[in-house]
Image 1 (cartoon, rainbow, N blue to C red):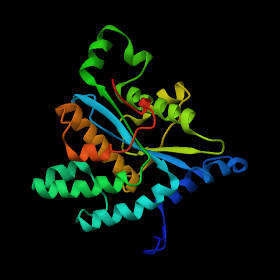
Image 2 (image 1 turned 90 degrees about the vertical axis):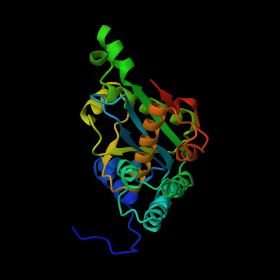
Image 3 (image 1 turned 180 degrees about the vertical axis):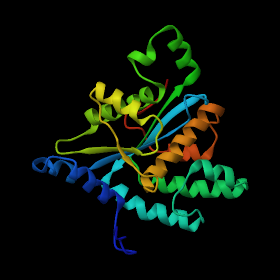
Image 4 (image 1 turned 135 degrees about the vertical axis):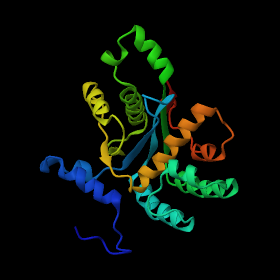
Length: 247
């Protein structure tokens, strides 16, 4: 596949819109083209060996997401972080707390300047397992990741009911390596909720979601309300209470 030349104006956002476009009936493709909002999600934690499962991400307008791409790449470059940011790797490799704080301030400010709302739902695995031992939670409602993703999907639909105008459209994306994606899709399909389109980690908007998912997991585990990077990510006003929650 021929790569787009440098500074050609190539946008992953635009590319993804065309991918979705090609998956629709040609007579209805205008729906994808006219999308005005997009949500990008990622996850953190694992139901087998970690205390929480988190699904988190950001909602913004297509215009702001497109502007976010070059801003994010510039932030990674000036901080010497390479092309693809992984919060777990960053936390493990950068030991200098002052340097780490300065980098996170830069990254989270870049995110905060381009998003409309943050979404984060956490599943307490101890509580889930306790209830599942006495009730058929997994069989009737879904596995932990699927239930967490479902809560985010319900929040997205609530936001649409409250804030969408006639002619608005929204796409939902999730990092393609997300664990138990099949369980999630089965649960969302069952409940007639939007199924996120998978996108690669190289997508800047997914890297933003990766940071929020990691920060949400860290907060749940340590209850650190003073962590500046988390506070900075959530400076945006939530458009409705249903967009954030903890099981």
